[in-house]
Length: 340
Image (tube, rainbow, N blue to C red):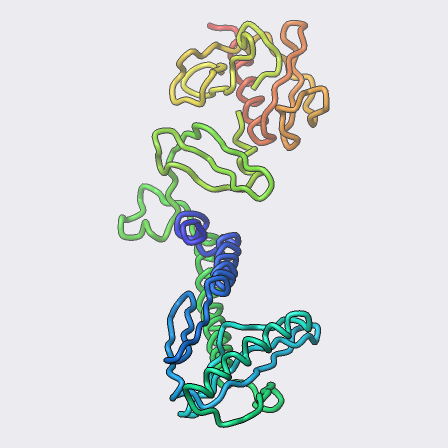
């Protein structure tokens, strides 16, 4: 799911995609420990993890030791270290001891493994060697792996930051395309496409918010912020009037005719009812109040109108409300102007 969001969501700038990848890696690590198994028989040691299986005969094992690691709070973590005759060492995924309480069970399992080793192989020591990072030094493989990861992260950051910054600067400095712009140069300017927002999906909490476009053009949906999605909620009258019967209107359509109320986002003016602009007068514009209801977002503004003596309230996002009021006022002026 994290990879899908990285590809089809916000891309490399989507922080939650990286959070998902981190959680996935933690889950794989936990699953790695959950499926680990270790067994022993007359042939040798058999270990199985999430990624691989290993079978080591007793004759290739020089000794079985205790490897002690120290936790963040100073606790001792005991694991079994297998010393091979070629000089290499491997740590078994099991058994492990995380505290003093489970130490007897760990020691009993280690004694069983050493007894099988003495019976079917040849142990180099009669006692249990204890290895710590102070006595054996830090493993070079771990240090090299950590160094490689750090270098890879630094290389990724060194590549990603300039690319992201260059794209940001390109979008900031780009100018709109014109009819005179050659086709070969249109990739360097901004091209706008008309689109109709059919509906919005406002997420809650950390969920994503989406804008859905009519007819899937220029794309099916677009991920936006919660505030951005709320700004596209239906550009509506709060009272039931003759042009908004039973509060059926969810949108106000401007252009290609007189201002009207429609129960849909368009396109077209199906079921539209003309707004009697000659009767409307703007009295005031204010912020929402508790008496306006929960359907009005807190970021919107409300215009208080007078409809031939009856109070009417119009709610919309601030920028949209300014456009609507200007269109209503212009239409009212044209409607009340004397015709020659």
